Length: 138
Image (cartoon, rainbow, N blue to C red; front, side, top):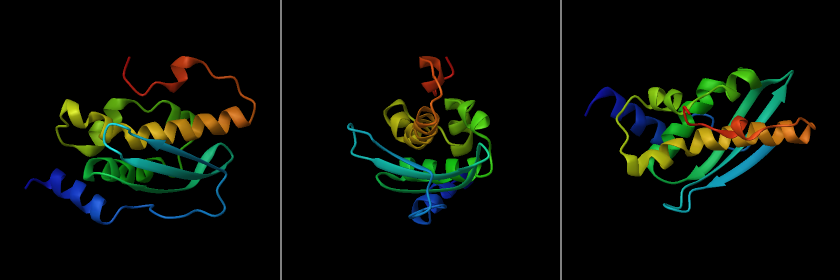
């Protein structure tokens, strides 16, 4: 087993930033109907930066490990930095080849994160455009 596969298994068995976040600023839940994976993400946002982030979820090793990895990556980052994240950033964090059938699993965490941020911005009264919601490198 290579180092990257071990990393995924480690994040699946012992996910970082897993649990409740009672003082959350915003929360959002996403569900992948193709496989049944789900993620609920909670963020504490201060001065347009993610001060804290937690998630709860269930699903395959890829979806849960990817969510653990992305939560590590964005803690302390600004909303603008998170909005700029792309699909390739998530694939780079995973570090393993993801089959087309598993791509939705791998992207569930970053999709949930971005939609949580967008919900926060909408709640603040900001106007967003469709391109803001993309995670693909289009």
